[in-house]
Amino acid sequence: ANPFVAAEKGFIDEVIQPHSTRRRVARAFASLRNKKLANPWKKHDNIPL
Image 1 (cartoon, rainbow, N blue to C red):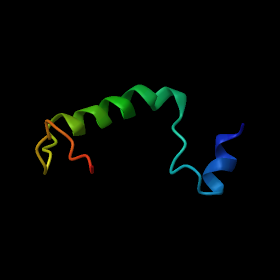
Image 2: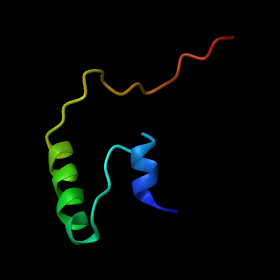
Image 3: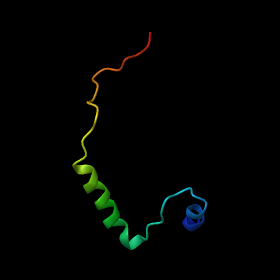
Image 4: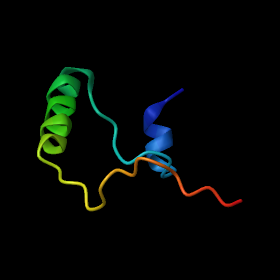
């Protein structure tokens, strides 16, 4: 399972090197920390009957 072949075929966007994985994951979580949802959570689903 070579990740570079998958990247060439377009199955994945980017190959992250092992030494930069922690930094990339921390940056992704930091960007989600202040994310605002456009729609509020719904307490109940609208199930078609």
